[in-house]
Length: 123
Ligand SMILES: [Zn+2]
Image (cartoon, rainbow, N blue to C red; front, side):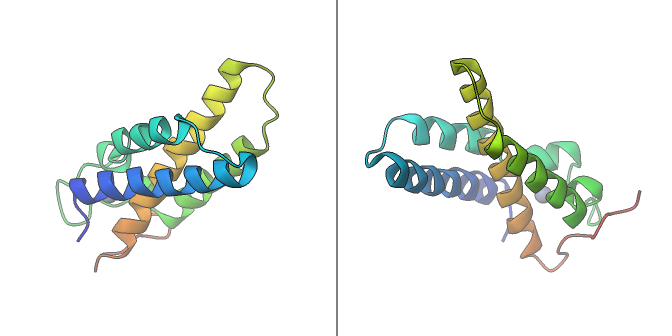
């Protein structure tokens, strides 16, 4: 099942688990940041369905495609490598990673349904 509640829970918990693990491995302790990032991920969990609303059974097109997932993944890779120089850049980097992670979790949840995801959709 892949509905709005599933997307919110999966995105929030997925980003929370990843950020807690990453921060603990990096610093040996966990701050408030994973909770804030999980909240942001939960808030943006339905972004693909905002871009392509589920108005009919074949609503999944480019923004729900494997190709777009690859673009999001590449963008996240570039964000991850970004060597930030001030606090604002650090916040933007973490926010972008949380939103990207939320987007990919949404697509993963959708991919487990019988309709799956298109390679690129109808361009
Ligand atoms: Zn969707």
